[in-house]
Length: 218
Image (tube, rainbow, N blue to C red; front, side, top):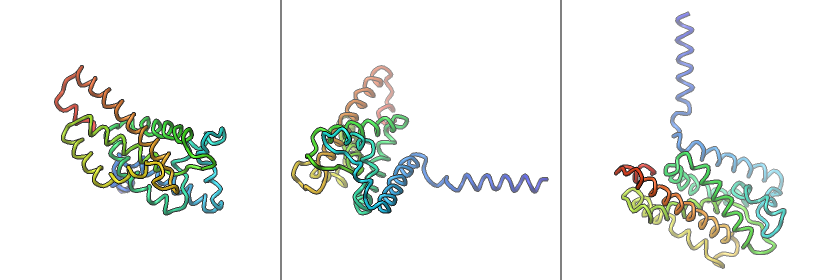
């Protein structure tokens, strides 16, 4: 009997250690990434038919693409180009928002998607997670500007250094092969959400002053 209990305990500990090397804060992001890659594999098998479910501007049918757009990509190179910035910027937003991260993500997807649906070029289909990535980018930059504390300033400078060139992708006519509308609307949604959250946090800090509060959200 002692041997059995010892084996059971060892097995339990082994199972816990199997996934413990993955930080809890990034498990959700990795799960979303895995779903996107799985859908792209399925889309490859279906000959790219799933891409038709993207956002079709000003089309009633195209509204279905708003929640689906971040999971649809025009090939693995397109998906790969979005994967790493999604993980990095998404991790920063997750650390800042904690329990509100899902709300932040859904808000950016919906507002950015609706904006794309409204202003997108006619007879076009918009797909890709870049709108969400731009939303995370906009969120981080506006929080860095508004918070004005060392942690956020350093984060904003680092993100600006590595990803600042993304802003060109949100300019009309910069590249007609990309969805600048999705980039622009996603970034605008992220800026709005970040601005709103910064104002809410400042209000709470003024009501309950604590010198560590300004750093607790990053």
